[in-house]
Image 1 (tube, helix red, strand yellow):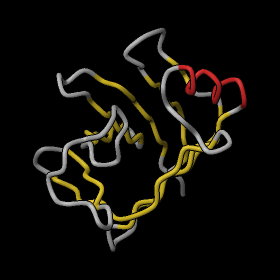
Image 2: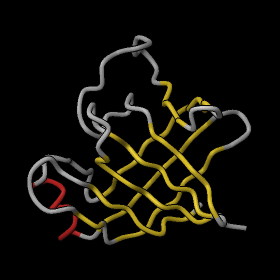
Image 3: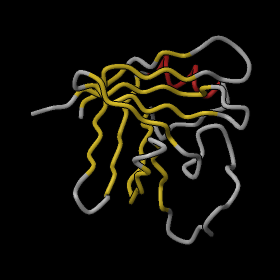
Image 4: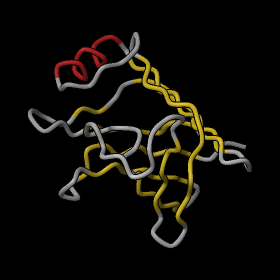
Length: 126
């Protein structure tokens, strides 16, 4: 999947639309790899909103479990106890809600109140 758009909604300030590129890979063994590369200005806006990047890169690599009925994706992190509380708005142990329409995968991360904190749209690649 290639990134079409990614928005972050910090608890303070204006929404941040990421300028950059990205890829998402999910295989038949439940391995999920995501990498988004932002420009320096976007990385600075994210930092100001309380989200750190690694040189303008947001990434995660690991395994994920899909709940098809609830349409959620949960990362499985090595060494993390099952059911651990989320440690931040984009914490890896926070469920992502997904939907697929017209070849576009939308992943939405929500806060404890159910409000979106990020929305990523990914287009299926051939």
